Image 1: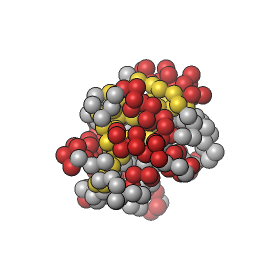
Image 2: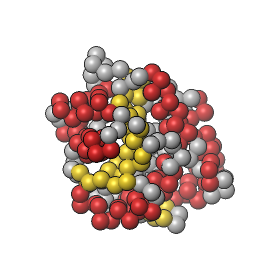
Image 3: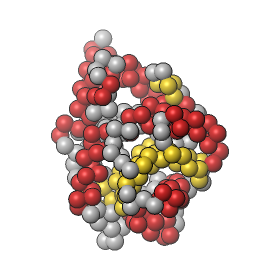
Image 4: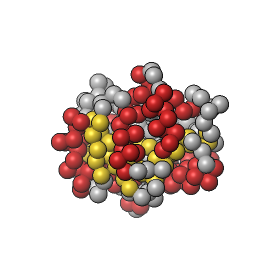
Length: 231
């Protein structure tokens, strides 16, 4: 059973309340959930800190996502709580500050990870904020037992990819049409948010089903911001 688990929280030192900031006609994290519904999975879960449940529960329900609360900073444990609660075998890990996540790349990575039997999978060379990670649930449960540093607990997967002798890692470069190391799509600062608003508006010119496809997002991004530089 594959669980798509989206992590999100309310507090952010650089951009407070960013998950609830509007992007188009809805809060950003709601838009991320709607986009991720295009990625095949058996269940979709928003995993948030306990203190975010009140704010996030109506948004999760509206997007037909399950929701589970857990520790604020031990995000690894939050994921493992979801794994145990929903009896997941595979996890597609996504984050709520990536509104332009490439859903076609996410679906492809999941297929490839399962075929390879990988403990951890992630594409290289994607724009920052475009990707997901695919992890075997039992590998995350093992990491939960052994990961000791704050970074390993907060960022979920470092324990796995820092131990290639113990885990089967699948980390190929993304398909050339999805590559764009110079592009930043995540929303972590006021500048990121302003850029995301401009990109969101530019993507309104393409069909809704294409707005989170990698090749489309990259093309619209480059056209929008290269034109701005020339002005």
